[in-house]
Image (cartoon, rainbow, N blue to C red; front, side):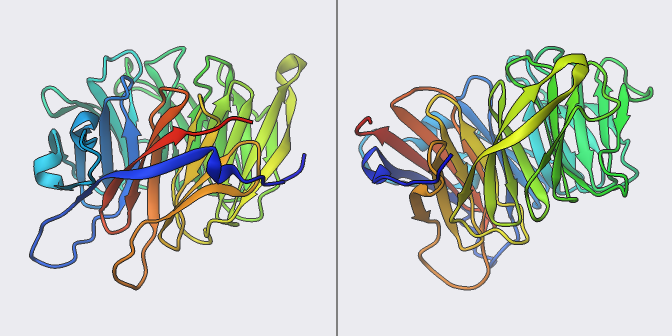
Length: 356
């Protein structure tokens, strides 16, 4: 298994392409970016957080061609801005909608879908009793079916074609109703749905019969904040125990199976907050934020970071990198977008410089 770390900094080089911030003269504004998401075409970026706004940016406008670092303002750089009724904790683009439909989960326990052409909500579910929705996702096999995880300790599975009726399924992973912090369907079309909880565990369910967990991911010492599929049978999890873990999910007969830890990644600081997690599947890289205002990139093959960048060299006091997202294209070049608790958005580009 091993966590050996060869001199990987020579394999990838990263540089800052752009910085998007607020030009407000009013003073510091609480605008933590809790989520960053690329659209299905990997050309549009959506962000959201506690400022009750969904902003969209064209990636082409954030990547200068002259080798300089673009310094931009949110208002002028964004393609659109939608004001929302509550603070937002999650975003997800709806599969098969041509990048037109974007869903959000909010602090009031509501899931909404927005039509980005009309800038209006077109679907709403309020199934979590007013408790915060931490995460939502859609099935790639059945794009009309989605799931949301909440502080109420449940995962609600719903069908957007059945507005106003009962959920397709309701799952309570923890017997003591520990908050559900993350949920992700297998993006490769497999049956596994993985859910992370505050009880230090993640649970795997069969999307075709979401009654009992078919596997349990045990190994973290604190809340599991994120789960991401690296490939059809490999999952990366993040926890406030300050580590990431890569798991191999082994589905057995009769819906059963197991999960084993392949590798643990450590170096970033994460003891209490959501700092983001994203995987670049083509290149095998894992990105996350940190509570010491740094961005970390890990190679899936080794347990130590291959690239670390200070997010804020100016100022002092509390702050963190609160969200990250990889662009899912390319093999020798990559793009990583990160958002901070100060509302600043940064775009980094990477280039592969050597192979092993």
